[in-house]
Length: 158
Image 1 (cartoon, one colour):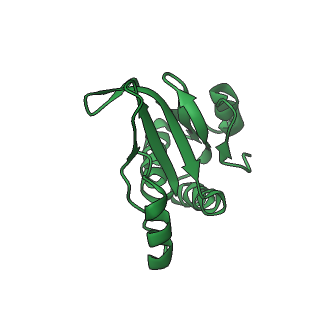
Image 2: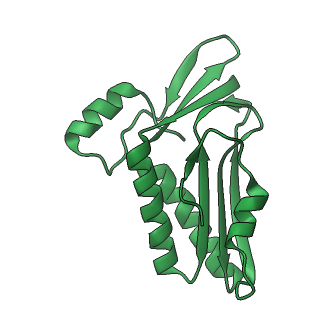
């Protein structure tokens, strides 16, 4: 069972997959999001992820709990924070279920909810030395006051 969802360490996808597997689960679906070398026609050199850790950890836990309640699955989730180079894994999700359909559905639910709800922000650094916060929108879970504070801190991951 993963107790911390955020890490500055490289993601260990094999361990994530192993953590959900069991003899009563016949299907494991996974999603791994990698840092790509371009965005909106610009060459990306690296990404910087930051988070409001207490809220991010709580939202990740809530999403995992929702998936595990909605489907007969076990979920593992990990998201990098800090600076990542092109090709590195930024997020990894593993979902094990008795059947593949449930695993696929739950895996998609987890990544979509993570992107929608979790306060993790992504800054892209470009080949020309400039940078931009991507999707500078506060997560829906924040209060109006938190949205003002969070929104001024930068953009969200995309």
